[in-house]
Each structure stands twice: as structure tokens, then as C-alpha cells.
Image 1 (cartoon, rainbow, N blue to C red):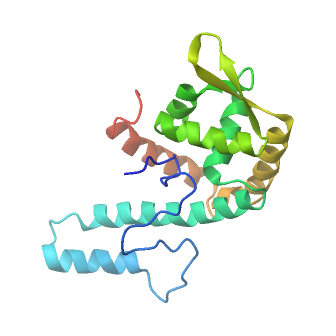
Image 2: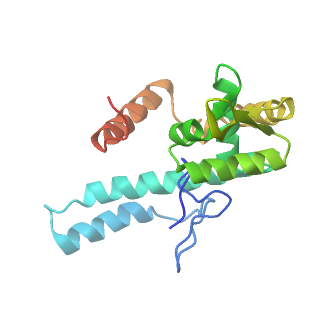
Length: 193
């Protein structure tokens, strides 16, 4: 099974199963298929089933598809994938503009092999350089280049202009959503709270 980036997809690939392709654009149905699925779920498995949990989980996954479609389109206009953009942001935020492959993998929550793949692609584009890590003869640092910073800033400006696809929420709703999702992440032991 391929390792997945924070975006939930294998680096450079579209999320898919053998028979299902995600639709990352709004489908504009005349009804909410997730709400309908919850109704059918409760009819099938009863009022004590977890229909609301199923609807919440499915809604989160659908919103992820919609946001990733938007983010990949923005990043793609600058020759990037969203996963590569995430790596550039991470490097730009680091104190010296450089990080080891293991640190990149850790912070992006991907396998080190996936981090190496992302960095190799960025290096091929001239957006990062790989330099030896003096503390680890087998390892290397990824160092963001000025071209990489410019690409990262361009994508960031577009994402900011679209309010990261969440402009329909006000500040209070953002805080509530972040808090709820953080509770799920803490419950899943995604990080030490």
C-alpha cells in the first residue's frame, strides 16, 4: 500500500480504489446524499445505530475531497502538487530553511520514503537542494531555494485569497470546527495533547 501524505493521497497520485474515483468538484445534487444515507442507515440498523457518526465521518471525507481538489488546482498552476507545497511551507517555516528527510516525514506525517520522494521531485524542479547532513553520513538535508520560496509564496497567496476554500465559515465557526476536529485527532492519539 503506498504511503500517504497529509493530504491523504499517495504523493503524485489521485486517491482511488479499484472501483471508485473521488469526485473532487461539487456535484450539485438536488439533495444531500450524506443526509439521505444517514436516514437509510437508521432505517436499516435502527435508531440506536451510529447513523450520525457515519454521516459525520462521511462528511469529513467529502470535505477533504473538495478541499484537496481546490488546493491541487491552485498548486498545479504553479507546477506543484499540494503535498509538495506542504513540504515547501515546512521548509520555509524552519529556522534555517532546511530539514532532514526524517524531520520532514515526521512533520508532514508521512513515511520517510514518501518524504524523500517529495524532496526528490522538488529538487528536480530546482525548488529545493539536497545537501549532506554532517551529523548523518547517510542522510541529507532539504534546503529551500529562492525559486522554491517564490513558488510557495505564489501558492500561499492564492490559497489565502480563497480563504482556503472555507470562506463560508465565520471566525466562531472556524474555532468550533477546529476544536471538534482536534478532539477527534486527540482521541486517535495523532499527537500528544
